[in-house]
Image (cartoon, rainbow, N blue to C red; front, side, top):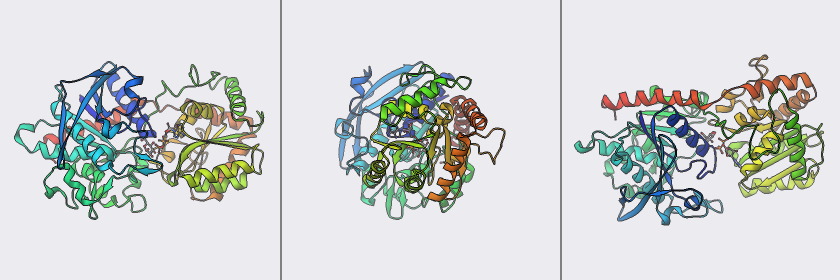
Length: 488
Ligand code: ADP
Ligand code: GLC
């Protein structure tokens, strides 16, 4: 099958979160199965300097954007057989310090930037000589391409355009803009209605994609069910219920080429479930790196992520407040809301021998935290999939998670199944419930046999991309059928 993917971030070229990991790994997994895969993404600052790219004057980009025309260039790279990256080079839009915002505030021209990106995606979908069967769009930044393709497909010359699949990585981010910005699309205003691009008088990029997609997917089965409820649906639950037969949840995989405990460039020691000596050394190395007391027998809890409400940072602050009186250590790496950042730093100042908070983004340290931790905290309010809990399982850091979305689907609690238990789950969204789960973790830590049982289960569970990629292929086939039968 020929598949063209599009995403505003792709590991290892650009990344703010799990979207980049997921798209980078899915494209590789599909290509390795022998499919022809293209992946469209912006050429951000620094990519050309770090990677060898090829200029493609044969793929010119010159597109209307409301009242003006904007030109761009395409650069390609083929990191492996069957996989081509198409970087959209438009310096005014993409050569910036960050991907989406500056000092925590979204760039004022994000509607222009991502309409242009979506147009470039739709343009490539129509003009690539290898003719994609499926266009797979990830999140709001490229979702508009679905509507652009739907519009073009109705014109006789373009009837061969691909079927459209849209994946929701996080329904809380929809790309909502004032209605007048719909003019940037140069589409007829007929599309600006509540069954297509309009969401309560606003122009919604994500809704434009969802309503034009043949198949909608999201990144875990449980989140697929959750987003059809008012509580998690962010105002789109009605639409998703209406299309429930075209909505699927596929759990993300883990790229074990990168997330590995042996031969990992970021770790000093290697280890496996049958010999954890290296893990203990990693723990001591982490304590030394971050200036925590050298205490191999003290349980160490890790946490990595965006410091935003979604991730449950408020209940984590509350739980730590009470738990830091116990004999334990906590290491936190992240950045996000300035308020949360300073609350974590204040707490760390009060417990200097127990809590370390590193503000910023550091991928090497993220591997060392996974390797050095005994437990990994992920108390999210909601979590479409979540990758860190799956990385933790492989690294022998037992995840402590809330029963929501992909966290619930990927971790097994003692209550779910004692024989395969590999993590601790709690349900209520409160500091008390999280603190209680951390108490359970302490009890496990002090029972060496039980600790080993959890670790072995976690380290041997397999979330490789093979199965996830097959899930997508099944839905691609359904999308092609729906497209050929004239739906959308
Ligand atoms: P989300 O995409 O919602 O942020 P995920 O768990 O799916 O959450 O993915 C987060 C990804 O980003 C993981 O690969 C994680 O290691 C990485 N990450 C998040 N924050 C940081 C950070 N401060 N430093 C390094 N890596 C980070
Ligand atoms: C989003 C979600 C996260 C998911 C990631 C990759 O960022 O918040 O739960 O793991 O996308 O699909």
